[in-house]
Image (cartoon, rainbow, N blue to C red; front, side, top):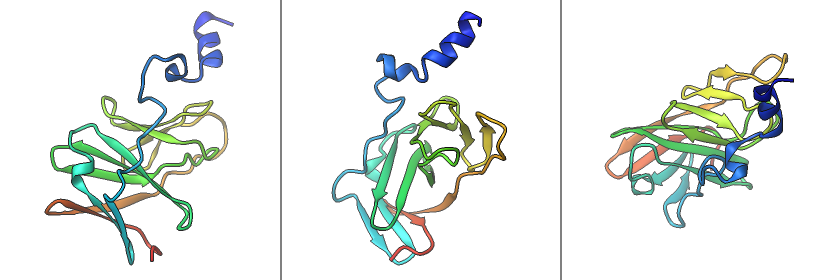
Length: 147
């Protein structure tokens, strides 16, 4: 086994070694910045003030784990925050414009939910991407079935 292969196997994520404070974790949306409407999650855009910012919206009762990222000055994306490989948490990597699974294997997904890299031979499944509409200072994330 080469050194590179060993490091890829033995160090699943640089953040586990303290290399980055935000590699594996996303902050939750601030209290009061999220509300649920029929068919939508409404988020105060001030929760993502700078390009590259990302957060998660988790509502276990509604079975929602959504990652929202500000990808540009007035551009936002929203996708499922759980990897389709094994359910691991995903984080946003702004410099590379993709989502990265924080578990072993490190699946990567494009901002449209399509698979970039997959850890094994199983058929890859894309992430669910949600449409985001901005109206003033609010983001509406269109989610079917949310009450």
